[in-house]
Image (cartoon, rainbow, N blue to C red):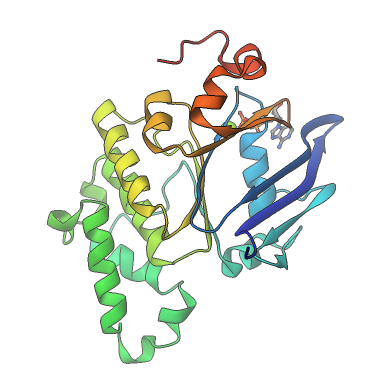
Length: 249
Ligand SMILES: Nc1ncnc2c1ncn2[C@@H]1O[C@H](COP(=O)(O)OP(=O)(O)O)[C@@H](O)[C@H]1O
Ligand SMILES: [Mg+2]
């Protein structure tokens, strides 16, 4: 067995005495799509902040492949290959869809090395492929400011994809989306599976059912359960702590 893409070992942080994340461990294999579930305040966003270096941990370790990245500076972790999508899009509104992908592409070290000669055939082909995956081919020459909320989120996913991060962190990527936008987003994320390693926080159970293989459930900063959807749905601890008040269908 090779090294996992992401290994979290006993990670934790406190905010003024409150343990937002505590002794949390998780191993995400290369090419895996892991869904992170948990009630509001469970610590999901804080966990992503700890992985991406936005927040420094007070206990535990994080490995990207076999490189320990614990408490590195945020930009260094990004450069090492952790890509993160924030809720507020960081697209350049005045630039076209295609140009946004080009700009993002320059953050990919293997593309950037050759940029003096213009974009390589491979980089261009990859951008066209990504345009197809995110479904914005017809809008490639539109300024990003003309995109809908959903389309802007998809462009941002595309901008992550062309950077080829080793691990992609998505925190509630369907927030504020319509049902059909949510469905399309799940299709895009499914298309990323295998090629990218992804950890996604999501509340929409229809979406989770659509994409989930392995699910990790957090509760009060701790690991509560981990397993395939069928196991998680029927796990009494999970029902009690998180899903009990909600219907699963
Ligand atoms: N910067 C912060 N300062 C103080 N408390 C925080 C901070 N960030 C998160 N928390 C607290 O940590 C807990 C986990 O929050 P969060 O990670 O946002 O949960 P989730 O994303 O699962 O809803 C909550 O109790 C929240 O109030
Ligand atoms: Mg959150």
